Each structure stands twice: as C-alpha cells, then as structure tokens.
Length: 167
Image 1 (cartoon, rainbow, N blue to C red):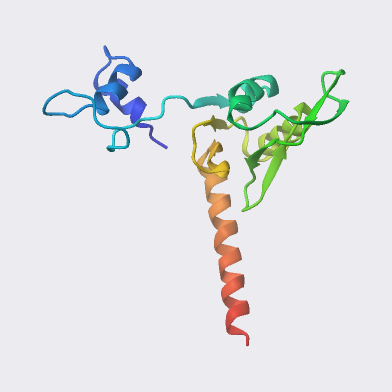
Image 2 (cartoon, rainbow, N blue to C red; image 1 turned 90 degrees about the vertical axis):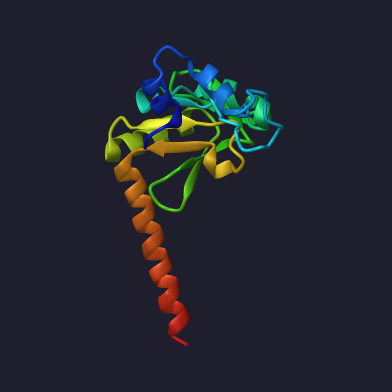
C-alpha cells in the first residue's frame, strides 16, 4: 500500500509531511486555504506500527478521546502479571476474515497479536482515530492479510449466491 505522505516526501524531501498536507488544503491558484470539506483534507493523525511495537497503553492513549476505553467493565490479571481494566467500550481489530476481535484490555490485544503474528509475521498495523467507520480505525497493512480477507469475503458471497439460487 503506497501512502500519499510517503510519495510526497520522496518527491519533495525538504518539505515536512505537515507542510505538504497543508499545501494540499490550499487553492493551487491563489494559495488561500480551501473551505472545510473542499476536498483537500489529509489525515496525518494516524500511526503505523509493527505488531511488536503495538502496546495496549498506546492504543488507549490514542483512542480514549474518541469514545473508546472510557468504561471499565471489570479488572482481570494481565500478561504483565498485574491486574488491569477490561473496557466495555473496546476497539474492533480486524481478523483475516469478515470478523473482528474486540481488544478491550492488554490480554485481548496480546491474544490478537499472537494469532496475527503466528499467521502473517510482524505485520504493520495502522491506527487511525479519525477514521469515519469503526472498522477503519485499525487496519493491517499486509498483502497476505488483505488477500485472506478478500478470499473469505468472496467465499461468503459465493455461498450466499448458492443459497439464493437453491430455491
């Protein structure tokens, strides 16, 4: 997956990504700022991390202000040997199917990471607190993972078509 930010930084190495994004939010003829929603807003608030770098405390910090990780449901023993909160308002993490896993505490994150890493390796994860839809807030940036999701969706659609024609 090629990111606009990376392409711009390669083309204009002396400009920062923020400067470039602000330039994209300006009228190319006048240089004046575009009105809100006029097609130029670039999201630079996302974080890209490898699975090994992904820590539960960081996820809570990134998403707590965005309606996640505010409602402690109960406490339980965590992988670090300490008791910690399990949040009722955890975040959905993608699986290589059309399903997702709720990451509501450190233990559930470590379980998701372990399953994902065992199958796909130390993949890149994109955290985007500004994403519109809840399923877009966490993405796995890996071709094999994406292909497995596509294959699972295709198989599901094929089965639904078969069920629809069997009447």
